[in-house]
Image (cartoon, rainbow, N blue to C red; front, side, top):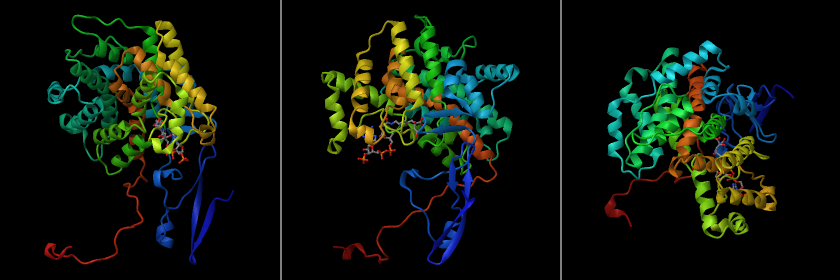
Length: 430
Ligand code: SDX
């Protein structure tokens, strides 16, 4: 394979270098195309377009491979913790004991939100979606920590904002839940690790201590690790694009939270359970819903199915399905939605429409079963995805801002509007 391709367009030629990644992934660098030929490329949805070089996550959609900084997610899900995985993603290596202790203890230092920020919750109706609250609160952190929003943050600044966001996101999410059910806030505790601390803030109360169930803690830990990063997905690309204007990390992450909210992206875990509940209420006829998903006029999609990259299986879905089974067995829960999900998967994977389009269960198809079993309310499901993805967003923003070749993101377009025409005074308009 040559190290470049040469394009010849209307007599103008341009040499486009070929870039080869660690795993042999290849790209054609068209950086000179427009200047040399006047042409741009067109790729709605960016299904054929790379936006950057990155050393954070590698995934192979055909082989179902997902690695964080080269380490397979199967190893991390089994052996690591969420905070250790966050350190790996952000700093590019597993921490030694001293680094891990310092990183963990800094979570305690930054677990509280500014007391004045509690007033925000009073301004929202109890029915407010927690993703609306989360994106607003994260962006508003820039008002409470103004020294952190320099155009050129130092390494120490970024380290501090990173831990602030990782630690405070739990508190903000738990407080939004408490507000929605009219219970008093439960503050973070310094004697609890990341996941137990979050669960305690969610489910303890002054009159009702929360008994941590180890199986639930482990299942949520695995879920957060599996959501921690996924290269240039919609929300991470949003964080990078917003950050490319030198917007601060709080603002960039807030934008990422909004992108994740969409039901085609991180909002799918909530939409999957809503879909399974609809099927259950309708008698559990999965074939009926497989047929609906194939009928373009129905406007119905099998939520939790399909993926832009995975065209074989989503390795995360395999692990989550197994963890869902294990957790429900250990908790003695029989959730009819899990049976429906399994029957739906089986029916779809035998159907030519899904086979031809390589549509398989994705990370969101079974994750809601675990969240439901733990007692997380449905509207909080996308928020759990945001807590999990926080390390990935931070890692990509840091990689982007530290890359001297980063330029502000500003795509072009092909104009299809009206040709030139004169202004017509309103009296003369038809
Ligand atoms: C996440 O990018 C990431 O990495 C995302 C993520 C991450 O970790 O960040 O993995 C997390 O967002 C997972 C995806 C969650 N979303 C859903 O589960 C929503 C349902 N799935 C889709 O809407 C869809 O599959 C997408 C959005 C996930 C992918 O969309 P694409 O790649 O743009 O594919 P497409 O919409 O062009 O579909 C190709 C064909 C179409 O049919 P044809 O026009 O060829 O006849 O497949 C069909 C689609 O209609 N199709 C589906 C379907 N998904 C695609 N048909 C029925 N049900 C579905 N779920």
